[in-house]
Length: 132
View (cartoon, one colour):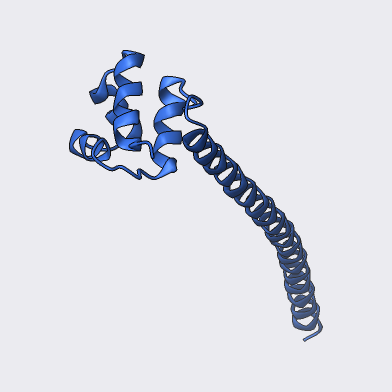
């Protein structure tokens, strides 16, 4: 079985990319990266993340390549689920904004009717006062 941590270290060093720069891009500490190098069965998620940054697919080892591909599929699927949830959220936000606009229109109508009613009451009071 391939030691995935060592494989990751080897691929990073061959890429010529700085470990420090990769750590910044991944928002992890250098200590974490060096710890990854010691893990024989490193999570394919980390291989995928680093692989994207260094342009590596880990295709030389079929087992590792398969795990990385499966991780990519899961990552894309989670992206798709997020996309669907965002679409659903946007639909409800649109409904909310439409309802808010309708409510504002109704409030404007009520305010207009209130002003009209106040003007009518004032005129009635003026007419009643003029009759006396």
